[in-house]
Image: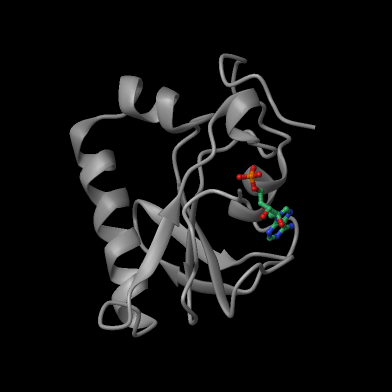
Length: 125
Ligand code: AMP
């Protein structure tokens, strides 16, 4: 069920629990600003989620409220993870679902990083 991206941050969401180490995740990268881990239901040979460590519901919330250092740190972490997975030369896709029409289900900002095969059209037709 997609979330309402204008809702307040819910500390009990599943990615907050992963950040706190309360539930396991296949972590692939972590720094001061971001954590990256494998999606539990991968939709491509490489399907990694990158999340900021701060409490932000969505891309909208993050872009409106996050300090510049957190935005820069998060964006750099996404690029780092893509490079570390050898995705730059073959190419890859980033996706951030926001709210109802975006189909966002977890109310903590996450960027999906897809790669490993040609990914086809940008949206299903
Ligand atoms: P979205 O629809 O953009 O909110 O995507 C949420 C993503 O989180 C989906 O691709 C799920 O498969 C993934 N997901 C949900 N729970 C977990 C979990 N515990 N560990 C890793 N990925 C998860």
